[in-house]
View 1 (cartoon, helix red, strand yellow):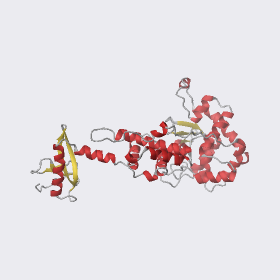
View 2 (cartoon, rainbow, N blue to C red):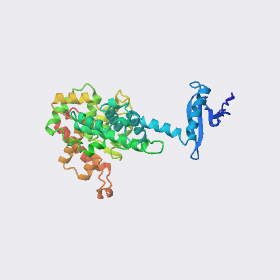
View 3 (cartoon, one colour):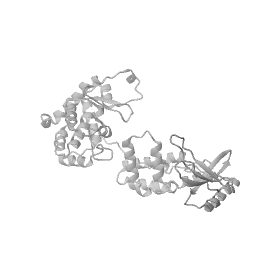
View 4 (cartoon, rainbow, N blue to C red):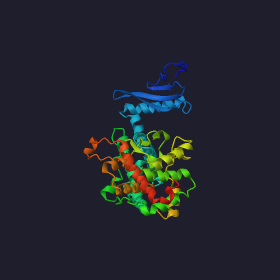
Length: 393
């Protein structure tokens, strides 16, 4: 292989690769990128297409070592093999759970940040010791045992974790192939749970804060050290929003002119606009006066907003004697709204519920102004139950 002067592209000129081919072995060459990276390659026409395989970097391999490697590769092609496809197959067979999971996240561009956060928690917790295992080494028996072990602590979390694992394997079945284009992953080991009817039957939580408990709960929130966390809990209770919708709220989503907030990213992918009750308007005005972040409920975290204040929830539960979750606050809002006989369509709009089977809903144009009175009624009722704080707030 002769020593050749490497051309450097001029400013504005299209960057190209240069190939310096060996006169002794056809198909063996040195590739030089526009950035000056030199690699040995072997190339051959296979099934009518020119296939190129990188052998290694110049410097990591000598010319003679690369030449011998090229002869082996080209020799395999001569006997009807496809070394590039074989290399791809070898890589596919060694794909680990961690690699497949990251690839799954890149492919699923529609996943919300909160969903990705929950998926990562499933990977880093229940399957922390499987991260470097090849997918092919994860068996049905392993899956069944892990599901049973996780279920001893929390059947619901066990089901959720294995559903994430099932999604990763389904993705892998269509992604990773052998040299002939056949799937590497032939079966999904999580299917064993369905075949054996091993999924746990989990009854959805129906807990909420009862009207007579609101005063103690509300009093306890004022004993939190952080005002942002207290406001966040109040905001969810008085809006009925999901925790992620409240967490990601930005000041750009708040319109004090119209007295509304708009949630752009929702569970049903429909933007959700809510009117502000007097209580909510006052809360947000107070927060706007001290705002130093684009988020209404900021936090010193990687995302910049409050995600799930577990410590605060536990503290309020302990102080008030009212055990609750963030979703219980949403259920409390819904239950109160229903008890006040809020019209069905107004209630659906307040909660951003979409019923695909309800044909008549498509003919009703619901203006946010029609939701102001129902929203205010719900807010007033909650404050009445927290009466010993309503005056000061």
